[in-house]
Length: 134
Image 1 (cartoon, helix red, strand yellow):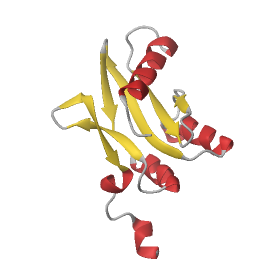
Image 2 (tube, rainbow, N blue to C red; image 1 turned 30 degrees about the vertical axis):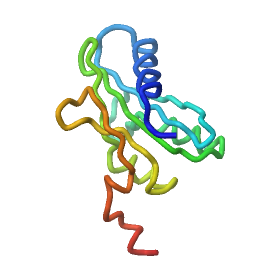
Image 3 (tube, rainbow, N blue to C red; image 1 turned 90 degrees about the vertical axis):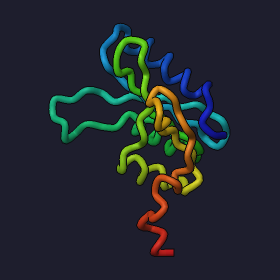
Image 4 (cartoon, rainbow, N blue to C red; image 1 turned 120 degrees about the vertical axis):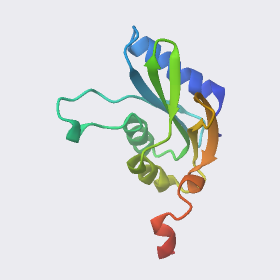
């Protein structure tokens, strides 16, 4: 199961429900291999060095359920009614690689960050460091 509008819409709905108002907020959504839809967000912390990515909760939940992740997207409400897609950070890419280079991730379209394009994780990291070890 790849990235689809249902996943994006579920994350946007979560953001609007969990964080009513217009403040900038974000969340991530992932599909597992069995089709489960997982959503998580990150708590604000007073010390940025202990902050978590929005994806962390989904990754932990999938691992707890022993279900591989097949797709992931991070959505951020930049301003009222404007939601942008964020490419997974390097740490989250490393975490997603636990499930292989074929995990689909949402990235912002080059012409408009409110639009998304699905890419294989391996496309984001064509020279992934572990490839040299195999």
